[in-house]
Image 1 (cartoon, rainbow, N blue to C red):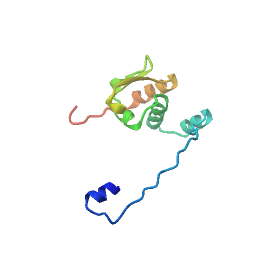
Image 2 (spheres, helix red, strand yellow):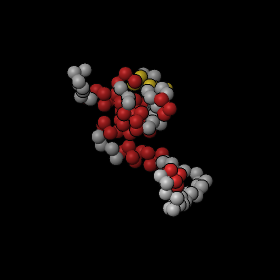
Image 3 (cartoon, one colour):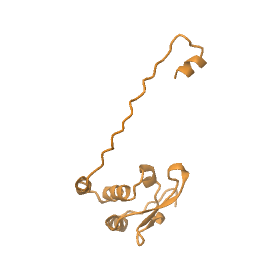
Length: 117
C-alpha cells in the first residue's frame, strides 16, 4: 500500500501494515456426528444432494456449480470436475449414500431449458 502512495507522489503519509501472527494450530474439522446432524437438518432433497456432493466429493462451491448431468457417473461413483483450481480437470470419488441421494434428486429434477437448449 505504501508503494502505491509513493507512486502517486505522496511521500508524507507512510502507512504501516501490521502482519498477522502465525497460527500453528491444527484446524478444526467436523466430527462424524456433526456431519450426520448437518445432513439430517436438510429437508430439501436438492440442498441435501448439493451438500453431500460438496462434502463427499471434497469440492469447492464453484466446482459444484460447474457440474452437469453428464459429469456424473453414479455407477462407478465418480464425478468429473471441469475447470477446478488452476483450470485443471479431474475425477473425484463419492460415497454410495451421495450417489443414492443424487439418483433420487435426478429422478424428480425439472428439465431446464436455457436459450432454447
